[in-house]
Image 1 (spheres, rainbow, N blue to C red):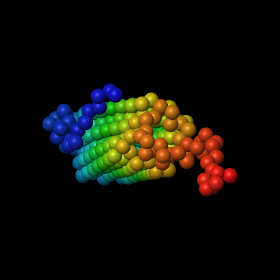
Image 2: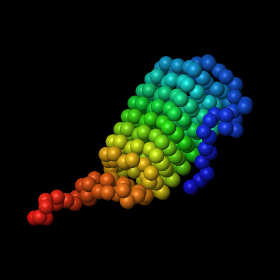
Image 3: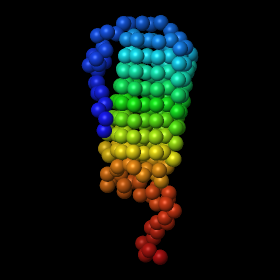
Image 4: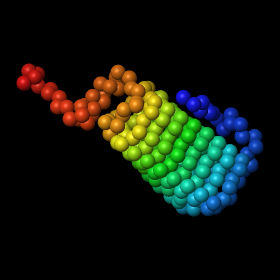
Length: 223
């Protein structure tokens, strides 16, 4: 797996000392370099095509609004909330999302490279046709997350819980589900290229049998 930058705290990032605080509104197509946004509520902002380079978002809330085709390069996102926000077609590279919530967001056709989600909650997130390479979801909760048609390469989920997650028509390369709790995983027929442990196999067996058209006879006599 490609080395993924891991930072437990904002202060550990290489750009922390250069950050300049700002509470200004975000603008469409604007470029932000080494800016820290803290304790800000972005209510229905429109910042599509914006560029964020080595920026930090701490204790902020995005309520609705749009970040479509925005680009994040070397960002830290800590204790943030994205609720009903449109981030479709955006790209995220060398980004850490810590203790954050993504709920009801449109994130289809997004690109995520060398990204770490740690202690995050993803609820009703549309990641259809996303590209996710070299990513870690650690101690996260993923509920009703749709990966349909997505490409996932070298992605891990240690300590995470996946509930009602859809992998239909995904393209997988070195997807590692070991260490995750799998609850109602859809699209099991598309899990070619994934690694699971024996316990997970037992749990997925009914869904795998159904996907393969296998009838399991549970009668005591077998007749």
